[in-house]
Image (cartoon, rainbow, N blue to C red; front, side):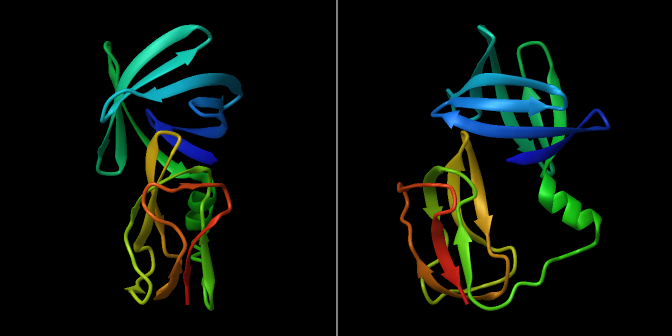
Length: 167
């Protein structure tokens, strides 16, 4: 997954690839490294990079994410790179017809927010998937009706797996 993080007013490109459970390859600007990331509490994480351990808490504050360690606190804004570029170009893709909502990455379904027959609006939450120790709400790209939900809470999913269908 590619992201753009705004840290102290400067944009940074971040690319994260899950290598295995709790193991990630991270590219931050021109720097690359592997990290072992584990969620150790409701908002607490432990990260090991190059045999060095870091503990921090992560909390959302509006549009910002606050990352706090023992010595300091940092605020940053993170956006999906592809969506950010589309928004910057002033484009909102028009979606029509039958749409398969797919998982963007491997993970575990935490919550199913809709049922077959439900009417949904554009950007309405459909399913919550936990991936890379973060909960991601999968949203509807269009207004329509839920035709099928193919997952249940607790189920593991693979990248590209169809979660739901909307017409």
